[in-house]
Amino acid sequence: MAKSMAKVASKRTGGDVPIVRMRAINKWYGDYHALRDIDVVVDTGERIVVCGPSGSGKSTLVRTINLLEPFEQGRLHVCGIDVAADAITRAARLAVNRCVGMVFQQFNLFPHMSVLANLTVGPVFGRGMRRAEAHDLAMHYLARVGLTDHANKRPAELSGGQQQRVAIARALCTRPQLVLFDEPTAALDPEMVNEVLQTMESLAADGMTMIVVTHEMGFARRVADRAVFMDQGQIIEIARPDDFFERPQSRRLASFLGRILTH
Amino acid sequence: MTSRFVRDAPIDARAAPVAAIAWPWRGRRARFATPATSALSLLLLALCAFVCVRFVDWAIVRAHWLGQSSAACPGDDGACWAFVIARWKPWLVGNYPVGQMWRAWTCFATFALFWIWVVRRPPAGRPGPVLVGFVLLPIAFLILLVGGGPLPLVAPTQIGGLLLTLVVTLATFATALPIGLAIALGRRSQWPLVRALCAMFVEGMRAVPLLAVLFIAATLLPLFLPRGIDVDLFTRAVIAFALFNAAMAAEVFRGGLQAVGRGQIEAATTVGLSHFATLRLIVLPQAIRAAVPALVNIMIAVIKETTLLSVIGVNDLLGAVEIGAKSPDWVGESNILTSGYVFLALAYLAVCYGLSRYSRRLELSS
Image (cartoon, rainbow over all chains, first blue to last red; front, side, top):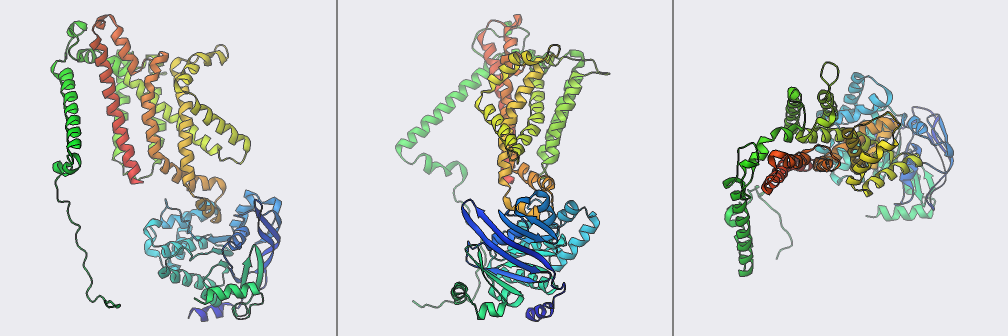
């Protein structure tokens, strides 16, 4: 069923307007060359899945898009904001994050706040939304992820899957034009992976632009418009999911798929 | 042995077995396991009993309770509580004017009520109101005690004894906490100069004994101040205390700030919070909560450090004992001074043990 929903929604809603454009981006951690000549364009409404072995730079790539990681060379263009490598300031980071949401591997919910306050703190204190309006918005998205009953609990009282769904609702409450997912199911027990993937699939069906770092290949096949394979800080291959999984062009991707799909 | 097993009836949960041996005998196997441990246990028990009996004999059986001079405590055989009881006013408030005692009583009563409120709150509750109370109380106390306007002025140097300990501790806390927090934040500043200055201040203060800081404040500070500006000894002592303990509090806050993970700051950034809003709404509430038990420990240290004030001539509890033992009415017997010291120790023990229990409770609840 999820598959058919994804099919319907893959008729792009926003046209081919680029929302992210990365030009020759290079990043180093000390002497380690973590991102090498990254050139990517993501259109509005696209769903991109990024995969690759650990240490390949997938997380660094998505964290560069919302400027959580600064880069040393290149140009980044997000939601109409143009940022050069030498102009990464707090103000630029704030501007970019007003339009980009993010879901982390470790959820990173605010433990000292209720679920509801986790959702409203961004809209109220980040963009000056009225409390009543932010409350309604939060309850709307809590209903969306099926957690209305847990609005007044602390994050620690929820299961991992529920916490990650709260984190997704929190990201949506800032009304982002693009949501980044950094291995959202990697820290979850196997039983809880599906509830989070289903939430993400329904988000994709609504036409949300998403960039997802994940090892969930079934999710990638069902949801992605394009899949990106990274290794050693480089983009090795970008392809539609059927080509990506059935007809990989690079030997590196073929051997990676061979290793993860056999078990 | 079959390789296949399927449970057909679930196992109900059962209560855990109760420890079979009651308390007085539970330790018997540990304390009287071998002849050697038995002998050691008996020896220590006898030592405890001996010390207790001697102390009770000195402090209660042979003690002298009433009297207005050293004539009430003849000989050195028992405690001279008459000295403590007769001189209750210097103990409690120092030289505070007799006609203005209601101001001192108001401070004690207010603090008692405040402390009852603090202890009865749920330990996991928001620490903000408590910290605000600790900042506002000493300001209110100083205004009330020193006076001005409709209240007759009382020189701060006339405040002494337990009242002084209370006011100095609270005033130190009220100033050291904000300064310490500012320094801890300064050490995370993006400007290297601010980071270096804050680190230098903390390392410098931690490397100098408090007594030296007090002497510098008492003797050296007036030389640096412009002519005509006269800061009294009491204020100078409080400034020295505040700066010294600000360095201690800064280290505690730094630990608290480090306990807030990088992921929290990143998450706050991605929901659109500015740097300042992230600090105020996400980082500080968690950092302060993590720091509260250690801050209570600093408070215990401050209370005990107030005894150092007597060295620079401020009339604190310890000073009240020594001045009292030198007064013409009470010179003579050495047990008078001893009784004063014992009472002092017991008073500090009661206050600090209570605080330390409170700090334990906070640690367990967090």
